[in-house]
Structure formats: C-alpha cells, structure tokens
Amino acid sequence: MSVLIRATELRDLPSLVECLNSVFLERRYLAIVEAIPAGEAMNHHATHIVAMRPHFVALDGERVVGLCDVSPGSPRIAGQAHNATLGMLLLPDYRGRGLGEQLLIKTLEASRGKFERIELSVYSHNERAHRLYQRVGFVEEGRRIGAWKLDGMTSDIIDMVYKFS
Ligand SMILES: CC(C)(COP(=O)(O)OP(=O)(O)OC[C@H]1O[C@@H](n2cnc3c(N)ncnc32)[C@H](O)[C@@H]1OP(=O)(O)O)[C@@H](O)C(=O)NCCC(=O)NCCS
Image (spheres, rainbow, N blue to C red):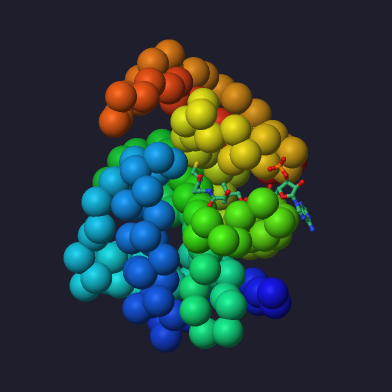
C-alpha cells in the first residue's frame, strides 16, 4: 500500500469529508459522533486551507485516508493567539503502520513559528493515540476523570500539549 502525505488542497475536500464522517460515525475517538453536512465540513476546512494553516492529508491514490490539522481559537478571544488545537484521524485500514506519526510530524513542523503551544484532548481508552502523542513530545497537562461517557463506556479526557522550544 503506497500512501502519500502532503498539504491538503481544495480538490481533496469531497474525499476528506467522507473520511472525516466515517471516523465520526465510529463514535469512539472523536468529540463529534455524527456525520456533518458535506457543505458545512468543506467550508470549515476550506477556510483553513485558504488561510495556509497547517493541514495535511494522507492519500491512497486520490482518496483521502487520513488528515491532521491545527486550528487557532477565535480571534475574538484575547491572550490565546499563541495556542492552536490539533485534530487527526486515519481510516481503520490505515492505522497501526506509522502513518499517524508521519502526519503528526509534518503538521508540527508546519506549525513551528506560527504557534507556541499545540493542544489536544485524547480519551484514555484511545491508547494508540495517547502513545503516539507521548512519543513525539506531547506532555499531559491535565486529566478530567470520567469526563467522557458514551454508549455505556466511561473514560478520562486527557489534555496534552506540545511546546516548541
Ligand atoms: C490516532 C491515529 C491517528 C494514530 O495513527 P496510527 O498510524 O495508527 O499511529 P502510529 O503512527 O503511532 O502507528 C504506530 C503503530 O503502528 C506500528 N507500526 C507499524 N509499522 C510502522 C512504521 N513503519 N513506522 C512506525 N510505526 C509502525 C507501530 O509499532 C505503532 O504501534 P503502537 O500502536 O503499538 O504504538 C489513528 O490510530 C486513528 O486515526 N485513530 C482513530 C481516530 C483517532 O483516535 N484520532 C485521534 C483522536 S485524539
């Protein structure tokens, strides 16, 4: 399987939305657990791409099989413009072979100089993601015990940060 990782382009958006919605519907790893209307999701990601924010896709041919991006908070919120929030995912068949690490490192490299802190939250049952974040240098800043409860399962929400030196 040959997978290319590159900066996201506007032409990737329809496939990117399919990828995103498919992982949302797994209901296990991400805060959103329902499909988002394609137009809404495309607008959101198009805004980031046009603004040249760090945004990468993993492509199998022309199909988006994974993505990683960072988003700054609202410009209306004072004092936090040095922070950005990272999100990432891969389709199930593409997990567990090092693609997540490659996507993450590219996104962090592209974030250097733009932000000082890259934040994320991960559920404690998501051990693979947690291990990956620790491996590349994210550290735990807090843990909200039992803050995630869905489909009969309870987990902690772990807040992590990567600080550029
Ligand atoms: C989290 C996620 C993006 C991580 O991506 P990934 O590619 O699975 O993770 P990695 O890059 O760490 O892959 C590493 C695993 O593959 C193994 N691997 C196999 N071949 C490898 C290679 N050539 N290079 C590196 N690792 C390799 C590693 O041993 C590692 O094992 P581990 O799971 O015991 O740590 C992915 O699992 C995913 O999309 N999960 C669902 C959505 C999600 O959780 N998003 C994050 C929410 S916070």
